[in-house]
Length: 366
Image 1: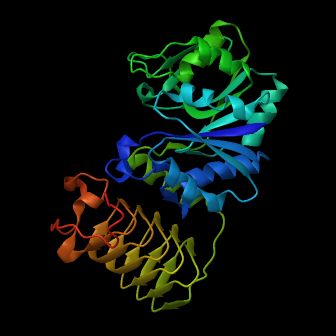
Image 2 (image 1 turned 45 degrees about the vertical axis):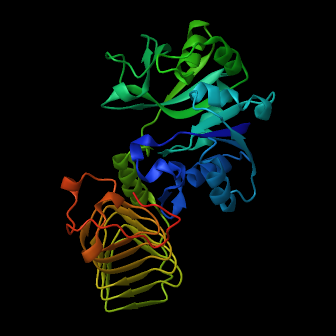
Image 3 (image 1 turned 60 degrees about the vertical axis):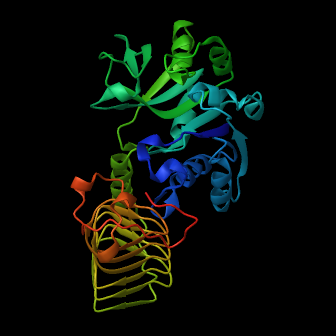
């Protein structure tokens, strides 16, 4: 079985950070979301993987994800225009050849072993298998309605009226028949080829469509809330704990805390679960809980909780940050750039000055 990861979306819901930066590269626990997807594949024994990317952000994804591709055979396929998930899957036809394959959305995180799904796919001789999650707001997703026997009866993409609470969460297993279905569907009202429509056609054709309901966490990280929730949940689920800090002085550590090499902690309180990357300097600050801090950050006289602070960021004299802060950003009392955070100004408990400043003019904060 081969793997396909769809990473061509624009990430408009995370604008302005994702205007020029791929959402799939935003880190959770110090690792890009896309790298977690590669880990899911590798853990299931899948080594041959195609990543579908868009023309604008594809080169950035290629460059930054390479360190996480060791031991894998990764091919990048470009989708010239955003024509829908089914169109993106169709681009993998020459890559998958005659083999079955698993498809992941490159901005989704979940708690399910792919090997279990693969075993069921082959055991049931499925043509397609899709992972579902019972959600409270199904109108933003493709959903599945079941008949009285528990078989998939109907699939609808982002229904306007209630159909079902079971949302398709972006994990699909296919054999080659999916390509025939993709070739037969028409663009939706939004002008895209929907993978939901292709699977719905398979249902109509009485093909063997299997479903698996996920009973653990799943996050669509395409929103600020999804990102921060995923960061919180994965910090809680992280079993590894390591303190590799260079020096810790006059500080208190509570709970599960991971600290990278060459980091210094001075006169600070660290309240787990938190992740701190390499070469981080934290002074006279309170960090956590539910916070991930990237490599090479400097934090002084600040309070940070429930946040993702990306690499090479300075946070100085800042009061109560709870959000996503883009890499290479300077935040300080006299120079607080509220627009760097993916929050409405009314939601941010920070100092009021909004004059922007960047550590690296080649990178833009959001």
